[in-house]
Length: 355
Image 1: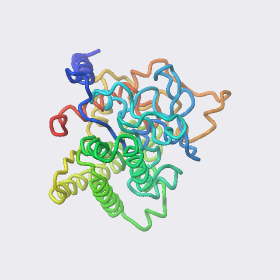
Image 2: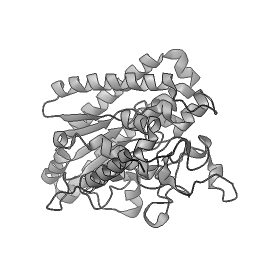
Image 3: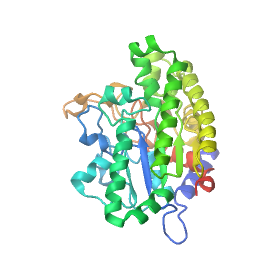
Image 4: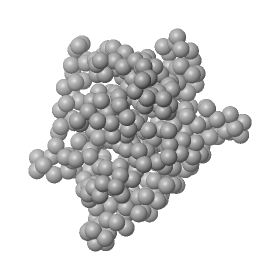
């Protein structure tokens, strides 16, 4: 392990376990809205093929059991919960109907395959942006029944709302859907995504949310699946066009967020750079202790994310022995080790801005 890798490991460890002295969480609750990078199991309860509730997903998670998380272990949402001092993770909202989990510390509404454009979720039969908002409203009613209206509004007002959509809209909808490409240019489609983003933030604000952090689009052109489909199976280079679209969309998200802050009094809206951490890992892996950036630890690069054939125990798939050396768990999702690094990078410079 190189010098930079050692420093990075020490930094991540110290940052992730930097809990308040009094042992209490930094905020009263966390709420997650997004796609598979944040989904902790909502898709388990949906009629979709986009599921991760079977091994080897969850191989390195608690008790080595799959939970619906698209990784070998913890997600960015889990590490975010730890960063803010929570001792248990916010549960998947749809699981509350079955497991009756406590909702006072917040819940997770994210759904793999979702996006800022409702057609993205419709394509993969996941919870759309609007459906996640409706579940949030239902949650608030339940919370008020438990603690009363005044305390419920206090929790909502002080809670941190984490939003992470967009990458799937571009990679898994626009560039795979010829009908969209006939109607819209990438720039026009991203304009729609950003408008939907603005509407969503305003809806959260109307519901009482005042602390909101938004993870911008990642370097989608560097995902193994993207390279395989849009470049070449033999290429190790990121797809420049995809990255450019993501980067442009992020610039629009930033300028729109500036306007939202001016328009909505008391809104604490912070954008997290979701692009750079992954780009750094892929282009300078050795500096961060990784040795494999082109292949996922699980499977090959693409089909294992949505194919039910991988649930068949007779199916032979490639599975690496040490996922910590891999940036990617599969063709679209990060390993636990990479998720830990990204979470630390996202929040390292914004804690003071949020709380």
